[in-house]
Image 1 (cartoon, rainbow, N blue to C red):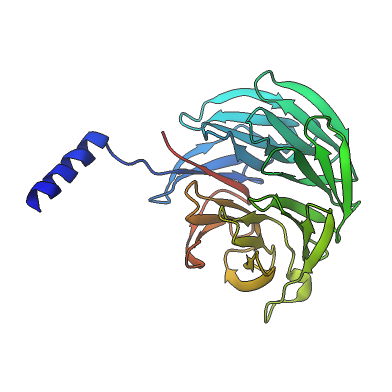
Image 2 (image 1 turned 45 degrees about the vertical axis):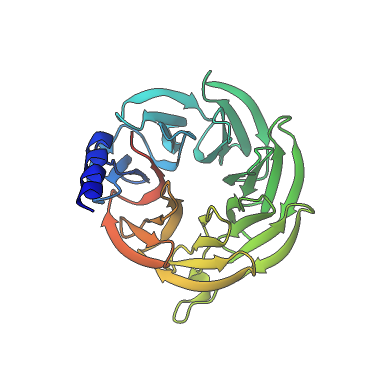
Length: 322
C-alpha cells in the first residue's frame, strides 16, 4: 500500500498542479468584467475599458472571451489567459446578447435598436449578414447541430428561427410577452423560450415548431408579477433546466422529461443570467441588484455561496484555465 501511495504521489508531482477554472462576469453598470478563480471564488482580475457590457461568451476552446459592449457598439474580445484585449468585432448598434456557432467561426448578435441580427466572422472580423427580425431583438440560441439560430424579439413576442447557412428566417413562433432567452436541449428536440413579462417558458417541439407546453411558476409569498423568467440553461445530460426568475430572486429547477418545476432556489437579488462550470458541476447566477453571483451545486440543487463582483452583474461564462 505504501508503494502504491508513493507512486501516486510521484505521478501527481509529475503532472503538476491542478488549475482552477476562471469565471468571467460582465458588470453592466460597473463597465467591467470581473474574473474569479473557481476554487477560491476570489476575484483575480478586473477587465475595464468597455461601456455597458452585457452578453458574454467564450470560444469553444475557452481561450477567447467575447463581450457585448452595448454602448460602444462593439464586441470586445479578450485573451482568457492573459486578459489582453484583442481586436474588437463589429456588432451593429447596441449589441445585447449573442451566440457562438458550434464551429467557433461565427457570432450571431442581437441588435436591439435596429431590429436585426448581425452575423460576424470572428477570424476575418467581417460582417457576413444582417438578418431583419422583429422589434427589439434580444435572446439568442443555437441548435446543437448548428443548423438553426434562434432570436427572440421582445416587442413582436416571437422566436425567429434563422438558417445559419442561408441567413433566412425559416419559421416564426409566437410566444408570451417580452421573450428574453432561447435554449435548446442537448438532443435538439426541445427549444425553451423565456417570456419575462408573460411570466412563462414556452417548450417548443423542434420537429413541428409548435409549443407543446407553456410552463408557469408559483412561489409562496412572491407576487406573480415578480416571477419574470429571463436566463435559462439546460444540463449537459438534458435532464434539468434552470430558469432565472428575475426580481423573484429565485432560480426554478425544471425536470425536462415531465416539463414540471421541481424546486425553487433562493439566490441573490434580481437574478438575470446563468452559466455552467466547464464540468457542469456548478451553475453560476448573476444577481444584478445585490452585485453578486450565487453558486448552485447541480447534483444537490443547493445554493452553496454568494460572492460579490462588480456593479450590476449581467452575464457569466466559465472556462478552463490553461
